[in-house]
Length: 410
Image 1 (cartoon, rainbow, N blue to C red):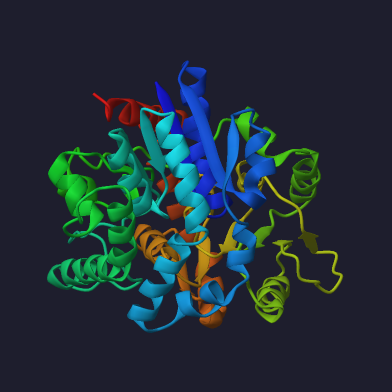
Image 2: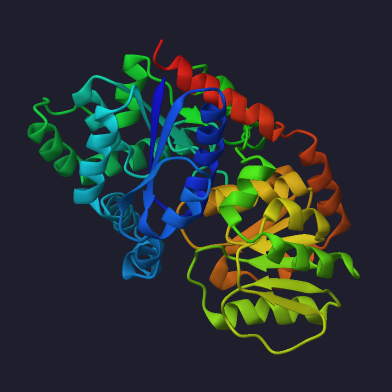
């Protein structure tokens, strides 16, 4: 089978899909990747055929859409910004997706630009499958916010968000469908895929959202969190000996607290304030940041890439932004999280860990002493250990995702 992955976004959007792509290739399927310009070197190191899908994601993350609009308190502003993120590099993305579809039996995407990919796949008469890294379709089980409103309110909130996103994106979708000779689509993508019996693969842990798998049924199968095998991770990271040194520092003393916000643009004073607060509590800290920090024996500042799977099990806890990948890594490591969220699905993950008792969260600007107290509470540590036992082993999760993709063409 010929499977192509068109992956917009940052490393957190790309790495889980690479886990599946590498496994499919090992089973003899023909696999291609398309990623943003700045992720080309990383993806190419896997040995999988890779082409450029859109301009650098780093440029997008540094712009006002991410820094301001996606963090707006106005839901309409956030939805418009989300559409603009999905439309980033649309001209090149459309051309590359079309080329991939011409050479494939199935087109796979992550969350971003899936409407475009679905339309292009439909125009070529091939299968389309999205990988969802968090809940995004209407339901009455999960709260789309950190707080947990009544069931009827949850359903109404999700349905409103789903409809508003469709209304903000349908003009672009209608233009593309007209260009490709397709009639206008009726309603949001999730409902159309549901009606056609097409799967939407939930590549995260059902245990963090009790009842959601039962509500959605087999058409939205849950796999568990995806993780590339160790060999593939080493290829992604290039010179992985840099992680070796950080792991050695973590093991040479009291287990440290990890502080890192991934590709999010976080102010220097916020990072230094969190680090200072932890040091005052007598904690060692690994600060994964490009910002300068005062020299301190208890603080190791790291600016290069790290393999979280090797480092985090050596840590006491983690303070992070609540991206799906980092949340999964902390859960697998059995350590508590304090999530300082900025946008998108991050408050949803903070809420999931809070319900499990293994973490807490707040908007990053308000992350403070209360969240750090909870992070270092022994009860939170015990809950984090209990959560680990509920998670699906990574190799099983990857196999489930592969089976669901292959099965989508049957």
